[in-house]
Image 1 (cartoon, rainbow, N blue to C red):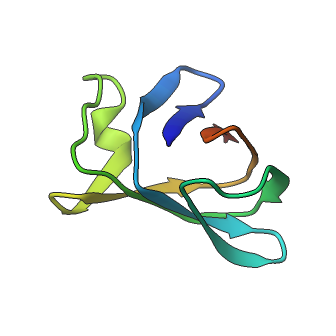
Image 2: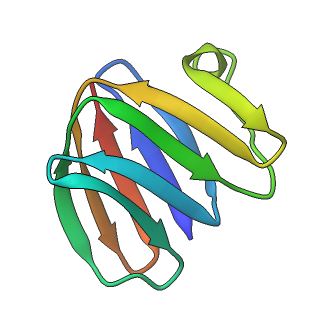
Amino acid sequence: MILEIVSPEASLFKGEITSISLPGVNGHFQILNNHAPIVSTLKDGLVKIAALSFKFSKESADKFTKVNEQNYTLAINSGTIELKNNKVIVLVD
């Protein structure tokens, strides 16, 4: 599935992922390929991204924390997520 993470300052990430875990206002949840459409608000916490490979721009690379070769995290204060047709768009603060 395709993930795009956007902040007010810039597009932080866009690429193919295998899963994403998010801090929803009603608890953490995970999205895998072919998940049903969803729109949700996010609270402060860690967004956990799993992918076979990662490519970050120089401007956004310092915002992500490497867990291992296939997993990164991103700390957020709040945000929203929309998933439709295997495309995840996350708007973060």
